[in-house]
Image 1 (tube, rainbow, N blue to C red):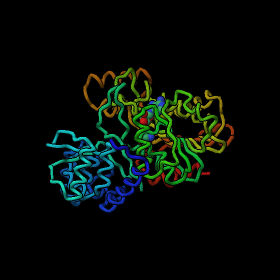
Image 2: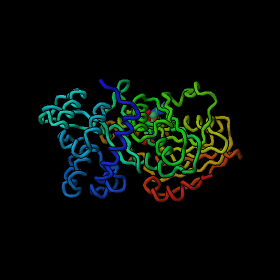
Image 3: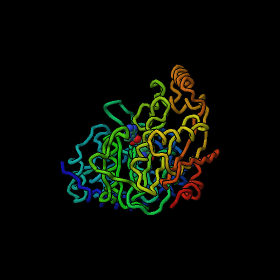
Image 4: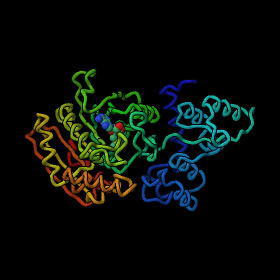
Length: 417
Ligand SMILES: C[S@@+](CC[C@H](N)C(=O)[O-])C[C@H]1O[C@@H](n2cnc3c(N)ncnc32)[C@H](O)[C@@H]1O
């Protein structure tokens, strides 16, 4: 199998982005063209319903691209070459981001598929009825293109951990982070790498990506190369629970971004909290708490820690955050906490258990009650390490993550240097 180096992946990424932009596959255009409120609605588990809407809305090439890249549908090989070019399709096949099918269900070896493409291009081969599908979902994020697993890609604990699709929390952190130029950024719990890559694109010179899931680092590497940002990245496989930067010496970061898993999972009762990217321990705060505490020890003077998570019992969250900081033994800095949409525990089960069964709901709800969780709220936490005695300010709103304008205009400036 011919290996694809980062340089070639990056060249193919550039061509791919150009083609996609040409057809209107952009963050700004997709929702309206597809007739959905936001790009977050273009998810493969609703593909049937979405295809019906697409029929009426998007024009032909864009519709096919949405079907291929977000709804996990197949496309004839020849048509994919016509739309995106032979170089892009061949490179993505070699990278296994695209897969080729013969007779609708036999997977074709990528090198054999590339050979067929070369023959088609040289007009020496015949049409074989091959089709392609995308192994990953492709999200336009500002002018970046980010690959993730699909929202309905199944996890199998200890064997296969999917990489998180882009979600409202991902977009909220992207919008809310200040964009002042900095030397370096740490993307903790990086998943697809979207946070660190946006930082590299707009305000950071170097980025370090950390995740406990090796597949997440493979995606972060892939996305970095695809967007031509790979030369400014380093990747660390490890857990926030460990001394994950031990081999990097006493490194400090000017910005630390964290989108930890946060779904409460009392006694392992919530099916939606199964994947590594979602389950945040019994009360949902296990990884968030450690991320903030580790963040404090890794933050440069004047640096900023920014996290996004749903938090249980938002009214007592500021007190818990103070406690986390005191426990970390470094009670300095200015903290700003924003909380938004709040859901009663009785309702929260629907997302956390995916409404699978009344039994699961009862177990989950009684687990939350046992832990004293009555409500769960969306939140953003900013800590500016300005050396001042610890202070915590709280702003409560009815909507936070959904209000991208507020995030970009107000939140992103509240701690700008
Ligand atoms: C909510 S996803 C965030 C993905 C991405 N940063 C985003 O904003 O879309 C959480 C990520 O944390 C990772 N994770 C879970 N537990 C972790 C741990 N103990 N240490 C490091 N990463 C962890 C998961 O593998 C997953 O990629």
